[in-house]
Figure 1 (cartoon, rainbow, N blue to C red):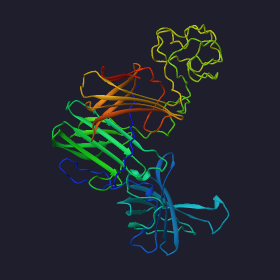
Figure 2: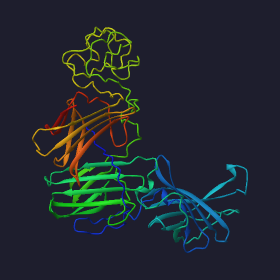
Figure 3: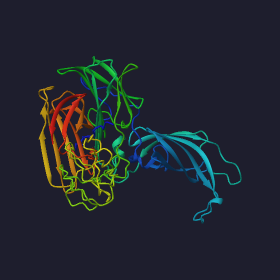
Figure 4: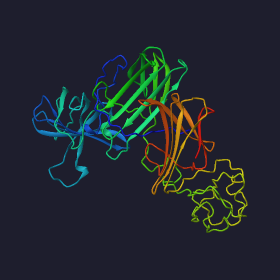
Length: 508
């Protein structure tokens, strides 16, 4: 399966304005709602036109990741007696609907006795926020309980209540955009993908890019080489804006950019594009389609549900010349320096009859017998079912060991794109191993990265101020925005292919 590259770069964005100005090469945004409710809306909100009344509004996510609001309403009944109501509801965009209840039958400082309390749902209220400091509450009464100890009541006619913020949570900044919910410990993130061309305009291309940092988030979609005009952008089936494609010195192009916080000439990013279907439409016709990756897991997760922690303990094979001295359960250091521990750490060494014929003249140097299980005494050449002298390249998946080595190789240009260039880097450190392939000055699009004939990643080439470039980055332990380095590229032939055509190549 192809891996998509999440290329992380540390960039800081200025805070962006809510409305997008219409410029000749920039787009008209059509936001679906004013803001999105985030944790930064937590605080005390006062009823603007009512005396000494208001709400304690808290944004929580304790219900299986569903964003909710817990609300306490401090108000008075029709007789002027103080009362409070409480409720819980699911948040949707900039609104939340909550049934509000009160409790009777309980006295001040009464001992816990659930049987003594009675709950009465008195109203349904809907919060709708215009921005980080103002909103409206729509109150609908639900009747008055009867009995001698009648519950506190609210106005039977209902109300439309204007509210404004009184307090902020310490350390929080409210933008009403996606960046409000970024956790301080959350790593920076970048994901960039080309959308699939549906064939209406074969020469066209569309690139989507999402970036998230601790204090800001951005999302942009750029279209090139299609006819001039306005095109709709849909995210998860919701229309979020229009892209105005105009003529430039490079042909036709248009871009729509969102940011959180909002400032300048870009609209507020008040939706999350990650994991959503992105579509560019001409009327109801889909021209381009694709999606960005959903939020990735924590650092150290190699993405493989195999018990690995990303620390590269599969195999520590740092030699490419197996000397055939794999003759007992306590390796003498000559069998690929694998430091056998008898734990057979996922190396698939299933042979107990080692006859010292572990290497053939066609062995590619990636002998997978790295973590012998202690029974590798009479190797019959069938180490794991595949290491029979004609290695197929499919049993070479293990992590290179830590060390103190740096290897750089310039890639050779095969002549398909005369200006194309590439560089391969491999670095061993005391606590990690890094491997990367960077290519430049090739056409925009996706390219396959092959290591030893096996496709390891897809490199997306995009355009920036330095020209066209793209990069695939691997690491062990895996780091955010990089792919897990679960193979050893040393001694392998590295290729960058466009389809089946090799564009750049090198031997590491």
